[in-house]
Length: 184
Length: 202
Image (cartoon, rainbow over all chains, first blue to last red; front, side, top):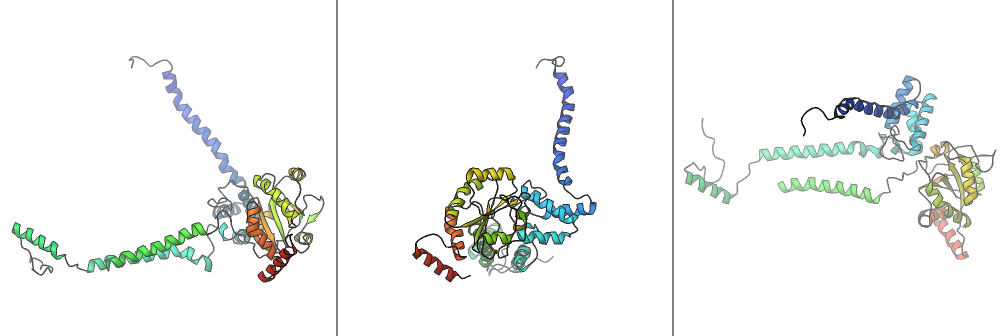
């Protein structure tokens, strides 16, 4: 804790810190950028096809990785599938045709949005139905509770009365029914 | 009444939870996908043979080479360590009279040929698939995978992972037998296998 000027080197360190931070971030960006660029290199040249390509590879599941789309997956099978998507788009096939092509070979599982068939009805609508049913039940429950007046427990009622009498307050009808509202 | 309003949602929850638990434990490993090509004939292809330069192989060639009997179509590559592990067992299967054809998947031809030289060649025919196009047609997503194809060239089963003694005796062997393969053994066994094949039906 010496007072006085900066320790030799300390000032130099302070001056260098800013540029160093900038340099590190610049390096990180430079290193990270090619990863994004790689996927774009694989996209078709034509802007419309490129747009369709990007949409398709985002919604196709990598069969090997289970939880990644082929856009974000490194697996060799994903690279093959991306290439197939690009080639077929360039050959003039529509995204729908390409999806069908892949489902024929890999099954419904390859689509992140499974097709609506008898088999997938429950998958699509099941959760929503269960949620609705739960919400409806909740509403019914709340309404019922609100409408119903519960009879008080007689022992508790007697205890409350005793305390009220001791305090000199009005105790209401003896049969435990709801007291009349005080007149204003 | 208030008890009922507790019991019913709890019961629904338990039923759903039970369903999900059952799906988790009783169904197949989600890492192995069922083949979308089951019940379909081998897709049309014409690819070069790995071992016979200049020869192009088609599904008909695989069928004919198997003599109208069911065969295994094994997807393998030199970069796949599990394929190395299953290689010897494929040799055993060949000795037992099982026809095994191969697809050399996304591999280098030189390396593949050296591998076969070093380790032996259990295959009948080997289709070279260097860019994975045939694999894509079949719905292959890795190696090793083995398809069971019947005498008519129809895909009956897709096995993911190595073929070994355990899963062969449990699944693949019985399936092959039901499709007409006769395992080597005493005449009694052959008769039983034939009777079994007759029962299972073709």
